[in-house]
Image (cartoon, rainbow, N blue to C red; front, side, top):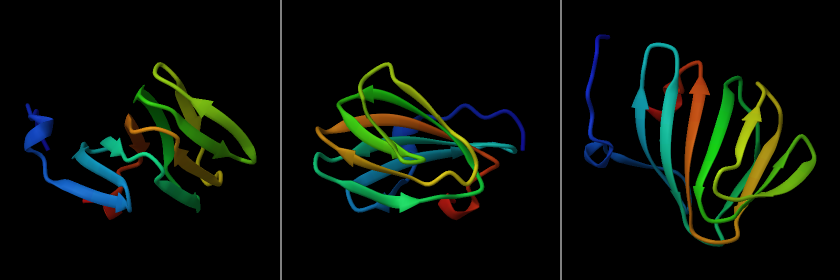
Length: 108
């Protein structure tokens, strides 16, 4: 895989969970998801081998990570270690960027 210049709006949208729509870019070692989240949508508790960093760009997203619940607003960055259970609920419409390492093959 070489250098790529991509327009995110041209990437195919993928529904990750109901109300969680993402456009994804994959490198050799990581995946980046540009996520639009509809108000009221819930991400059920889950975990994965991937380390995840979530950047909240717009809205209010209630996240529960390892049993700790916080309301995340624009500028909040959340680091989720590998295999830690987490869930989320959109209190408003939200925009976020999620970075995963290693690559999320299930999101291709």
